Length: 223
Image (cartoon, rainbow, N blue to C red; front, side, top):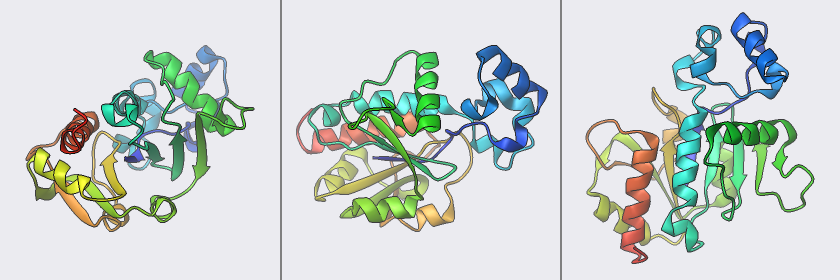
């Protein structure tokens, strides 16, 4: 499962000197370069950024990781969860990782990860690690048998039917957008073998993820 173009990044250099960023950094006792961008905190500064409505939502990643890593598929060692970010960073996650349920603790974990490259920082077998890698490079690396991309403009499927289609694949990749507003890039859509949807109206990333993982779990009879 790939959470694509996720709204997760460190505060970019072009807004480090904005008063909203300066005040936030002082309160946190960190440099702006060590802090995660959050639209709820940094909206005045973010308005200067391109695609700002598609960025700065680490809570979406938090919700999705809690859901995916607690899913029956993950508990049965049948799920690999990867986060690809807006800035083309790829975060790999050991399936045994227990993401903090507390949001502030999660933010601290992600800041450590994005600054130092892995968590725990000195571990030879980290629970999370990050590389600069585009989604296209990631797809080539994992070499899925078929790529399913969830998008409201895709071919409509009953969830259980889609789950059965995915279950027939040896190594399916499921791409879900990890941002709040806007469209997946055309180059992202071009990587999909099938663009599908499970509901005719927009849904949150975690709602789509819940539907798809549950449907797949039912299809392979683990739930």
